[in-house]
Length: 184
Length: 218
Image 1 (tube, each protein chain N blue to C red):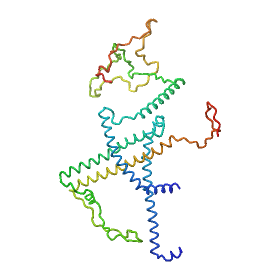
Image 2: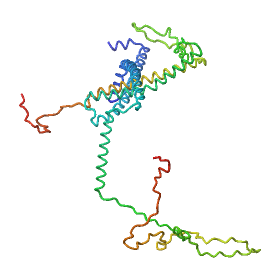
Image 3: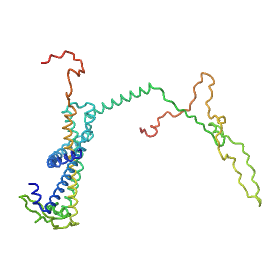
């Protein structure tokens, strides 16, 4: 039934197509005039330094209303999130270990030198070829137990209650953007 | 009467009648399909009017049919201008080619469409029509009088006409889109702000408390 209705409307439009064509011709004449008028308006906007197709004031107003509604909705959502239960915080404990078993020394100290006795090279003879002494490096690094993980750069215990603050290194106070040419 | 008419028809006439019916049905479907295509194209082109007027309408920036139509026409005119840029540029390119080629060849008065028709078959229609009950009907296939030919020296004319044709069809589609938007604006400017009292009964559906008692009815 819908197919027949569609075809019937199709026949109607086909019959009316000369009329539609006549209307299109009228619109085409109007389109030429519209082109000239809009082109002049565009030129005026161009020489005024505005955008060629500025937003209509009604659209600006509608955009402001929509933006306020959106901000209000976001504000309500944020308030609801504050009132809700705090989200679970994931704490990641960083457990670094060193395959050689030597921790990185603090700044200003000599690195740890392992007690390693290099074997004397054997004199070459006709029976055994010369073998390069092998470094005593662990072939299969294993994760050391938790108790063996050395504490690195542990913060010093405060001596008294007066010195509770930790002295931080001095960083340059100048703005990085100023050094980079002031780009933002 | 009907049976005597069928008896009077020969076998050839019956076949011709059947073929005529089939042709009529096919023609009906083709015309209907063309109409469906026009209708759907116009509906598709009118959708843009709804998009351009959505925000201003749902935020109640425009509140009356007059304001709605005023803003919608301003926007539709601007869309028409932007859409006509492309066909006008194509037409301008064709015009430039025509001017340059005529400056070179000095053939200012040449009929472009006659040159363009060289690219198609030409038929001889003489003797293909008969008069039946005062109506002129086609009775035979026309003979081919000339096959398509391509002259290299006519290449600028071919290109010009191609540009003009494409720009003309493009401009017609753009104008059809404007007409579709115009119809959409006309119908929806009324229906969007329409208030209906269909099914409303003042004594039953009291939604507000009047500040003053209603005057007695006549």
